[in-house]
Image 1: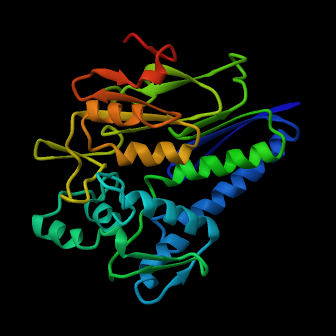
Image 2 (image 1 turned 45 degrees about the vertical axis):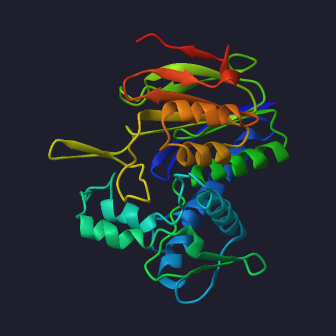
Amino acid sequence: MDEYTKIIYLMGTKITLYIKGKDAEKLAEKACDMLIHYEEVFSANSDNSQLGMLKKSAALAPQKVDEELYELIKIGKKHSLCENTYLNIAIGPLIKLWRIGFDEAHVPDKESIKKVLELLRPENIQLDDEEKSVYLLREGMEIDLGAIAKGYFADKVMEFFKENGAVSAMVDMGGNVLVFGESPSEGGDWKVGIQNPFLPRGNAVALVKIRNQSVVTSGIYERVLEKNGSKYHHIFDSKTGYPIKSNVASLTIIADKSVDCDIYTTKLFGLDAISIIRRVNKINNMGAVVITVDGNLAHTDNLKGRIYPIAT
């Protein structure tokens, strides 16, 4: 039985793959190839990716895409059309307008934001299941899967590891953590750190114990633009065109699938902390940890005895 850990830098983040099983190193190398392929297909920042090419041509005629890209667009559209959701895969033009996280980040004028809001309608993404094609009904629309893609990739890589006999594995996509089997250090549950939203990356505020699950955290600390004494984070409300305003500094979701964690960290982010906990308490096999802007931590009932605050 081999054990192997591989670290690669891709998709603007550090990715760690751990596998215990037969031919662990070979499996890790194949997983890297899968991730490189996904970046080529799914990148919103490359005009040459399949997703990037949709913005050039999908408003002119339906465009066929890879089955996996089609699947994720379909999942994203479904959750973007739900009531009271803050997930919107049609948000591309707004992300591009603000450019938070890039050197040219700026606060756009109200007129520019107003123009862009017209393009953020997920109902104008037309999908054809037979053809696996995507048609954008308004010129200037752009699909951005950044909020949900990493979880989808993590699930696909873990599926590949399981199919090829891994007895234990971890996929860490720079904050999207998905585990299977027993922890190599603990010999049982895995302990995953939840980032402290008020301290530099790598400082955990709590540890959560999981097995065969994923942990994903979204927070207002990840990418920030400071301008004229105001701070603007990168999680947007596609109804207003501005960063979401709520009392939440970070939201962590724990679920069986990493893509579900991604979906719900974005879908619920604009709600207040109490509403998030109430909503997730009603969802089977899902947990949530919320840290408010004034530093309070709350979690769902099913995490009792599984979450351990870290003294700072």
